[in-house]
Amino acid sequence: MSDSFVKPGGSSKVEIRRAGDAIAAGSATRRDEEIVQEWRDCHAYVLNTFQGTLRRWIRARPYVLVQRLKRLNTVRDKLATGRAVNVSSMHDLAGCRIIFPSVQELLHFREEFHTGTRSAHEYASAGKFDYLAEPKSTGYRGMHDVFKYQVAAAPGNAWNGLRVEIQYRTLAQHAWATAVEISDLIDNARVKFDRGVNDAREHLFALASEYIARNSEGMRGPLPDLTDEQIEEELLHLENELGVLGRLKALVARQAEVPKSRNLVLRFSGDQLQVLGFNSPKKAMIARNQVELEEPDADVVYIRAEKPNEIVSAFRNYFRDAKGFLDLLPPALRL
Image (cartoon, rainbow, N blue to C red; front, top):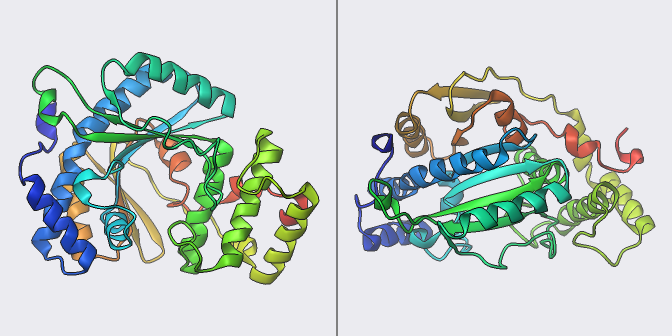
């Protein structure tokens, strides 16, 4: 099984860092980007191991679990904007996402999982990414853990030290995050990444997050000092000014045939979504890497999941499905 995955060691840490620095400076060669791709793709083995462990913990519970390797475009963006110091130390090149029906189930599962895995792998993010206790100012809510892979025996020990991020979100939190990504795509905006570029648009999504936190989960979000009335009034005012939610309502969710394969590449071509299936992680990553290098502006991602419905649920941004988010807003904004 390990032969299906890329092993570390193709490039040194110094070469990887230099390649990342070149990307950050806007002077990267094709070889620089290939080195970064190879480094990212080394994390697929660790990612696959963690998702297997997570699935055993989930068992028959109604949670959605998918895994993904970060898109090269996103790596470029994080390096160029300084949100990552260097690619060799990025903690989220590999990530699993679990979506829960409620906050209570999220917290219970996470506590269970920590108890069962902390002795096996190094917990590398204690107290850093609790965005339920301290939501981001953008409105993002959820919890993240970072683990550093560590096993004693071969062949797995070849991947020791690589990191994997686990994201825990509720359905409501995931609906909000998905809507931000879809809205950014259709309006050519960057609420997800850039602060202070469009204050009104950013505030609208922060207000929506606060409303959803209070009314769907009995919690507080990024704007806890506002009254319920102020939140609804400001949401209505901003929507009348910007029309952001109206454009989300006007979308028709994309339809795409999802192959019966665990290894998938999702790719936009024009306004169409294409989902390609592969019989091994390595083949899927090779296909995705080629698109990333030859079409730098392409929106393409490699993911792995057990069931087709998990793909649609976890990657609603690719299917342009914002209905779950809109259904959580005040009645006056759902019309």
